[in-house]
Image (cartoon, rainbow over all chains, first blue to last red; front, side, top):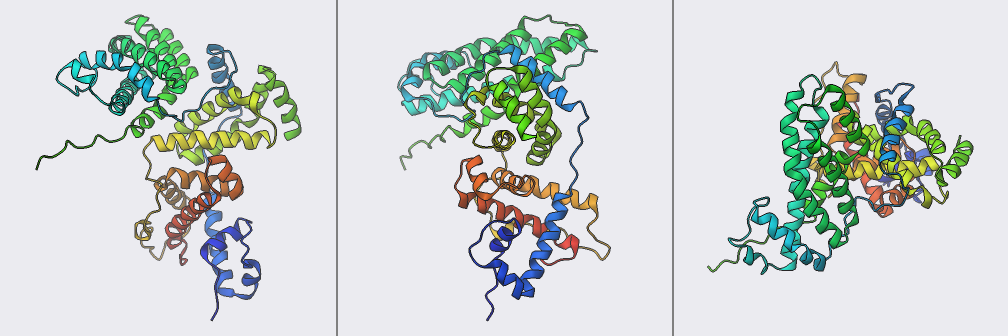
Length: 252
Length: 184
């Protein structure tokens, strides 16, 4: 009976990885496995031949131009935490409860209790969950506003008014969330909220009917800041970090 | 190439923006190709390129030169793409049951490895992979990174990186083999 090489060993062999199972010797003696490897090689070559969109000769300069604008905004080259969340400290989440209660009270988040005082009876885990969920929702609303601003047409300046109004409505919430994140020590989220706040304020304080040039300049700054990318990445992470709410205890 | 990169890296580490500009212009095209293969669309690839260079500038003081600068950049790009793909709600990372790894449509007699068709099939299969499978496969297949390097780059054990590559290859084989009139 012939012991053929496993597919895994054959893939490793194709990629030049060590298998430790004498695959090369086996292939020299086994036409069945040798044929299989040849098929794999042809198929994977087809994958390698798949075309990639081309970028022009000036692409590197264009990338640098956008990057430089962003560097100009934030000059200091210091190490910054990655998007990975370390988890907000529970004690710090408790410190943020005032912000949460405030936001619940003004209807920013779905009410979790009929009264503000009931919020204080929530466990620290529940407070953290609520806060994270609220921040995720805030990121999603902000993303919509920034996306609309990024796609706004300079030919229709009147269409910018609702975007400006939307940004105005998010600034105050953003400030509270930023303060909560800073208190909790989550620098990645706090920094993103800080950058988001700057972008929202710029839109909110800008003209209701900007000129095409003003819209274009704003869009360049938004692109340079990269805040849309950050909140697109962070929003789902915030939700993933929120453990599901257990169902209410049944009395049955 | 890496020699001149090393000089530019050394200057950029000291905060020399002009040196960093050299590095950006030198590595942008390759980085875009990697980002496109990792994300599957141009807009996301552009975002990943920007974010990669941004992070590289920020993290440059900590770059010790143990690996080539290009490898270091690719590692950052892979993680940026991984974050983005996961944020997009790709399929969960758990291994899929064999029957869920779908095969391509039944091949007709005229069916051959036509480039446009193959490209579509490959794109669809890559899109159907988990973020980890796609990233590990692209690093192995297109970038020639070893399983060990992939594990280090993505912060997973070698076995996990290896299995991600295997699953990706298995999916591609199943999808492409009928088009080529081969057995899978």
